[in-house]
Length: 113
Image (cartoon, rainbow, N blue to C red; front, side, top):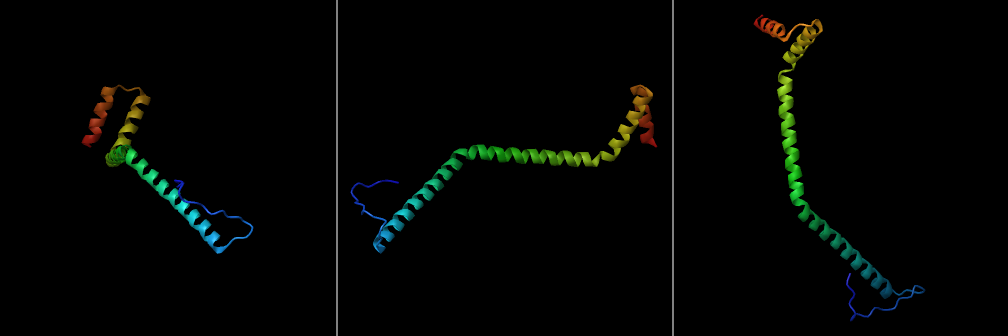
């Protein structure tokens, strides 16, 4: 919003406005509004240019995390049925006070059947 000292501004009184005064006020208002919008857009582009390395790293990190979670979900969903059975057997063995060796032999027998 530069001020040019060589351009003289007409003196506008709000008592009686001519159409030339109205057009002058509208032109200057639109001009200043356009400058503000253009400056805002420029600052937004500058912000994205400076923040782009951080944004790219964040996107890569999000993709890696989602990929790992997806792998873990597939891995866990494939082994859920056997895991539940093994957990139940281990809990029963612990409640009975059996040793780990006895538990392993029982698991091996169950798998053979």
